[in-house]
Length: 232
Image 1 (spheres, one colour):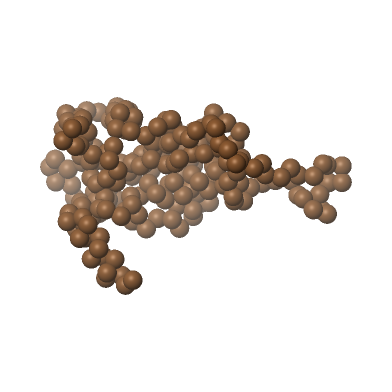
Image 2 (cartoon, rainbow, N blue to C red):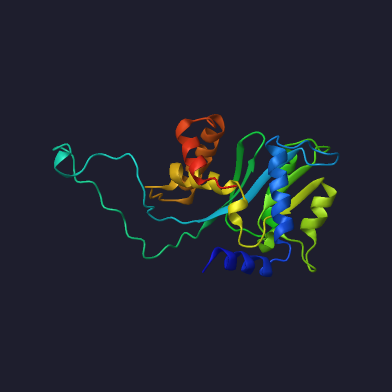
């Protein structure tokens, strides 16, 4: 399948593809200081998405561990094998996360389910971080809980009442959302090579990573992982 055919298929499925893409790119230009904002333009640009589902299972990847094989300490027992997880009775969790482009700061809340009510609760938290007179733009995908529908207008009503703009990425263009690179780093530093026994333990690790990441945003290793994953 050629690139041109893929592009045609995307635009045919999403008639607003070009307009949505242009709006998201304009918001990024505002956040990066590449254009002069006009009156009424957002002063804060956030990228939002859900990360998950977070399962309790062994995750492949590199980690620090005691040496195995013939080079290991002779007085140490063999390193235990990874446990099998044929059944997973503990359910899953979801991370609601947002990335402030201007402050280079990550925010996150872990919830047992992702739906419109929990999405709006997280949005209200983000809104509380900035004065009410500051207009906020939130870049996100068109996952159904993010949308206003004929039966449920809460998302649009809340945005209009709270000086917030939702900028939706085009269909099949999640790569435009800059938070995806932050998720790559979160997975690399937090989940790779782990086998958490409980959601409490896993959630604690994720929260500790977010705190560390916000204090060490300029860390060379972190920047390398993010820059490699960033495409927008």
